[in-house]
Image 1 (tube, chains in turn cyan, orange):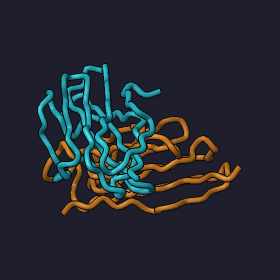
Image 2: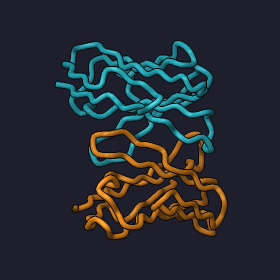
Image 3: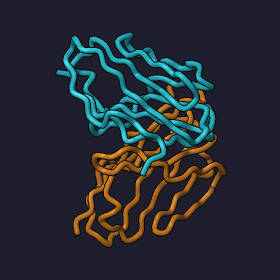
Image 4: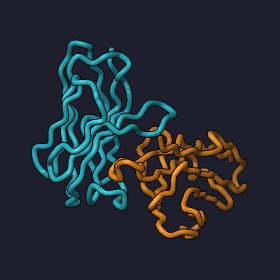
Amino acid sequence: DTEVTQTPKHLVMGMTNKKSLKCEQHMGHRAMYWYKQKAKKPPELMFVYSYEKLSINESVPSRFSPECPNSSLLNLHLHALQPEDSALYLCASSRARDSGSPLHFGNGTRLTVT
Amino acid sequence: GQQVMQIPQYQHVQEGEDFTTYCNSSTTLSNIQWYKQRPGGHPVFLIQLVKSGEVKKQKRLTFQFGEAKKNSSLHITATQTTDVGTYFCAGPNETSGSRLTFGEGTQLTVNP
């Protein structure tokens, strides 16, 4: 069981669709993250939020738009994606935005872009 | 830039055999973390090592942090089928501690 909840578990979308991924944590963590993971590869950092403010954007294309409505919620809005964006999208949280705080990952959303 | 290398990439063992994965960083790390990802699952935090030469044990798993804080290892004694998965090491990025640099992972399969 994970304390970071992600929905949906699976998502299939066309290249013209708009969809959103959602993430929630109730551990009081102040840092939240979006990672992208391709098969047989390590997670790749996309965005970091610290105290509800975007602190890191790893040069992610604008078709991915993150949002942090409050300290417990993190969204990732998707628009005009490409087939190569198909991957496992992982949300994570940590106590703080520092290297000493381990990451707690959600179950992920397996995204397929057709 | 900083690199975190992990070997081997794949390891197949018979149940009951031991297994070790090694992690090497091109830079000194303030800490190193280990994660396990089961097939079809998500990474799960296992442990964090902070001190030079530190050794920590979790049942059949033994984690070591090198004296120079640039390498680490995870050793599993008498593997079980429940140990199947990919093991990742991760260390803070040298330019931004809030970024973790993950190794490529070692995928472990255990034949019953």
